[in-house]
Length: 450
Ligand code: NDP
Ligand code: 2IT
Image (cartoon, helix red, strand yellow):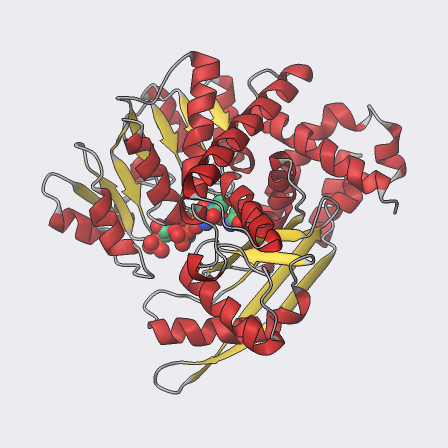
């Protein structure tokens, strides 16, 4: 049955990249041992329904730059599955965005959101707009134009977008302002809002901190190890990477790398986070090449010098690795190097940053591997906390959100590890995550009828 579904998807897949098929194939492979365990899955066509989005919304975004030149971009929202709650998932603004990339991200989001145990369905959206080099006013005009097209399809109990690559609290603020102007509604229709108008404390930190809380729990339970004093490597230099580095440093780890779309930094004395923030935060997307000019002793390797399939960050020996940039950024060649260098754990902060062949190698070699849908779920979880606060007109303090985030990440680890054990694939956290997430969504789909 699984082979047939994959073949059908492949046949109908006229899209330009394979990330959606990659994500579906991984999930269905994990589900193989359980699809026959309950006859309702087949009768209710759960797998076929699960791989088909409820709705793909595509629209034209028309905006004007600072020189009064008109531009056109493609905008999308993929509402994949709302069996567990309102559609929920980020918006990505990056030139590589296509319907296929967003389909993979929305599909993954169903499972991630299910793992949180919170009432949220799966969605993703975005645009092929490139924020790099744009002025603040150009970003504002683009966001307003994007919301003019998106607003009929979202709502606090319908679909609640948030940030992702290229979309942070500045963009969410502009999107929210435009929604309010059009509809006259002050609703929690977006999460990741600035604190001034309904954002949750700790949402900016949530994904990265959550990644490290998950890693801490996994290392303690599986290896009786801590992160203190350990060399860690992180890729990316955006929201997730910065807050992963921050929490790792707070726990006493020594983070020696970060990267961006230009190349990678190796700083053997530990990354100077203040310098990374100066280059990257507040909508600035300056190159990390500047880091090496500012910080003596650090080395910048430009992307043009990477060897084929080998990314500079993963060549550095480490105790634990945290890919936090983008999909398929850690290849089999990288994985071989990490294993050779004695890395004991790979914890995904980005969505699907590790290729299937690399994951297989880690699992074969006994490297603890956590898929993003488990370890990066802290971002969407705090988004749901923001929805709760908006609905009840409350404001939670930082410590309360932080405590709830830590508890939730530990629960996700436990759910994933126990499920893996229960199904005879101990320490396979990919199968554990997919099976645990699937069971919750499938049950809801059956109970609501077809
Ligand atoms: P940001 O836009 O804040 O940062 C992205 C970082 O990755 C930047 O350093 C960027 O480089 C780099 N990058 C982006 N695309 C590429 C590419 N094609 N090749 C090389 N480098 C690239 O995004 P986030 O930190 O929010 O997102 C990072 C990852 O985490 C994504 O996979 C996202 O889906 C995932 N994620 C994000 C969550 C969130 O709450 N924000 C929640 C859960 C997962 P440059 O600086 O040069 O642009
Ligand atoms: O991939 C993700 O989980 C996100 N980009 C965050 C989604 C959200 O709704 O906070």
